[in-house]
Image (cartoon, rainbow, N blue to C red):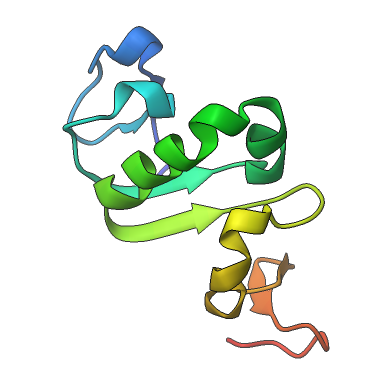
Length: 106
């Protein structure tokens, strides 16, 4: 129990929960706020499903991340992110970062 982290969904951008909670917001509700970390899960799917909003959401999320920006893709990296490919770590295995050859970075 000593390692559990409380997570609170912030529906429609409502900032609920305590300061020690991890609060989860949808990207459309974070304008004007700052976060330690911002994560985009399945960014390729977001780019496919909402191409007109993808760049806007990415900009808002990236400019709100104080320390860490995480992006995952289910398939291919969206074309607009291709220029950043060298800044990304290709995979995450067994709780440790791995390069393309499978050698551990950590």
